[in-house]
Image (tube, rainbow, N blue to C red; front, side, top):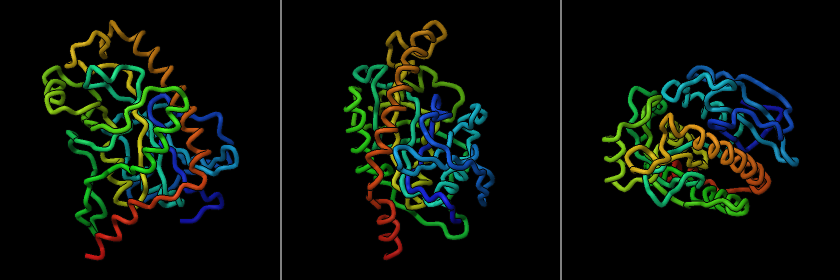
Length: 270
């Protein structure tokens, strides 16, 4: 599928980034895919002269719960209009005392405990794709640099646990994750990052820490009594994330990696 507004950079906005008023919108279009419609119409836009495509993961009014997001359609739609690199954002809870609310993590690994999600690849020509490195290292490094330039506390790698949602973890579940020395917990990274890899797209996510998960034993967890504090951290982190994404767009105008495409090419050589 071609477009009159080609853009190799795709932005998948997580919670808090359903809109991007800083962008100059050129076109809004709902792209058809073999897997149904994506979460929302794609925005073909520009920032500082750099063309991008923006898609809110949950939809413009947060209408898609984590376990109901059309992940396959979202990534396929971005690929179909020429996107080669995806920057995504997400909200996470910390599984480690040292990773405090307000910090950012750039995951390099995932472990998923989801079920019932459409996480199969192309059923007609399936591949046993290696998933040792699910996130693009070069893109993560670019994001780390941009976050540090904003004065953020950044952890340049980590394992993100993906739970089914929309409920949060029980204390027992959280403590299980902690015993395995995983770093943060989230509901939306899988199968999004996998589909990006399978379609040959470089992918990285900026994970914003808003609280400690319930098993950590810290007071600032996702509890009704803490919501004012958590929301204050969330709002600050959303602004840092927004500014970081804009700086990344400027930096990625000439970004070339192709690690995911190389992975697929090597697979088909076998």
